[in-house]
Length: 237
Image (cartoon, rainbow, N blue to C red; front, side, top):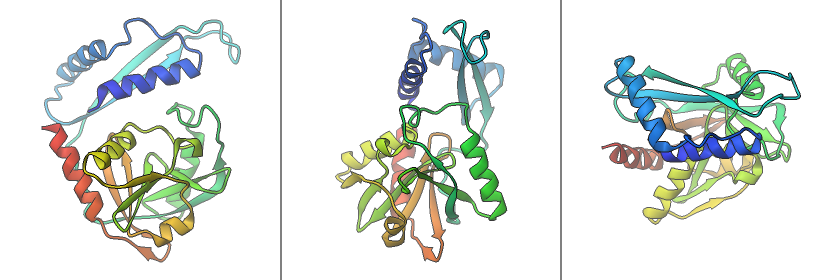
């Protein structure tokens, strides 16, 4: 879903990282390559696609070239459409390492040590996910997702200048909110924001929406998460 947005984000990230963007990096070309791979892998229904771009070898930390190669992977997904989790996620803060805010913060890259460490923290605390904090002490995202908080029917999410990844699903949730006349704000998210919220949910392109059931001693409902999940599945028809 939203392939054009993924390719646009990919090309923007490549530009920031000073990689040469080939002229054939177009949505139509990737659409053909992805469909060819799906046929090869015999994936006829739902699947997960990953496109990885990497700078060609040479130069160690001082690249000899900015030309790139890329890899497309495809794997089957057993679920049909986006499925909202029946049991709410149990989440808490990963505070050992703060995410820095700079021009690399919004890019989804293979430099994932922060997220790996957060994943290890999640395991050690027996949680379903961890929330990351930025250098300002605010909550900017989860391990592989953007975060949304609902209060009195209004949607709140961390702005890009707080260092969160510029998620494609995040973008489309905001678009769906606008289309359905749901008020939203891109504001810094604090612990108080979560403690005062009625709902919290996480978003990414592969899993759609996952609602949070508990943060510390606070419990949440999932009506808004279910609403957006239904809207997303209507887009897949």
